[in-house]
Length: 350
Figure 1 (cartoon, rainbow, N blue to C red):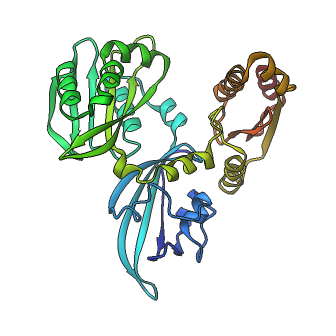
Figure 2 (cartoon, rainbow, N blue to C red):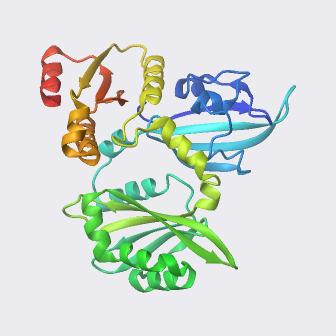
Figure 3 (cartoon, rainbow, N blue to C red):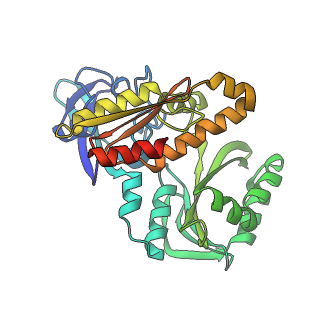
């Protein structure tokens, strides 16, 4: 999908779909009236982990769709529906493929900041702020789920230490001090565009699970700032097993690519939403994977698989899908290319 798309489907109190509009069918062609929404969307036998209806939340909430890697906003609105009593209208909006969004944004400092904040806001965050490494200053954009008006600026190192010593449980404090120091984050964010830290806090006598999503603002060799989104996992993910199953449905743990089931689901979505296109398929088989694991060790073999995955992602095209089928087999489906371009791609894969 390119650009923005929106749609609406309506579910009853038991999560049965009672109505789907055409725009929603474009975004999620697998939606069917009479079926459970979570079965159609994620092939689950229970409500999705981040579902706003299951969590009792109304109003817009932003998530990442793990099957298509898109930012999606869902607004759950309670409405009466003839013959079905009180229902929820699920108004969905997508912001297009993350890679396309990144590629089309200009690169001024303010727009880079905005992009990083969008990344940090892909789940519900209670606090969102940016940090300037050189100046050791932080600018708060959201605090306790409310926009910070006026925008607040404070010293990062001092405030971070106050937060850790006041709220973070003693067992997690050494880790938090080490991994949230400016020196550590400057180095770590050169290697990864985004980091996620999990830790525990004690508030009003109770222990809670929190996380920080930290996103680099700018390129690895020149960035001076990063953004931070703080959230409570007690609310974002009430059941860790549900969260684990959501990831397993969509992602191979070694390569980070679609697993077999998610790849074919993505293919179905491509065929339904890009009917005017024909597609090419590349299959890459890594021979003697067992011997490679024996020679390099399992971790060494995993590094080889991850390296192939990174190369395939570098060559990823619009309206495409890349998956790992297991046993050393990678697949990529994409819109048909001119023979010369296809040969260049094949040579690059080799």
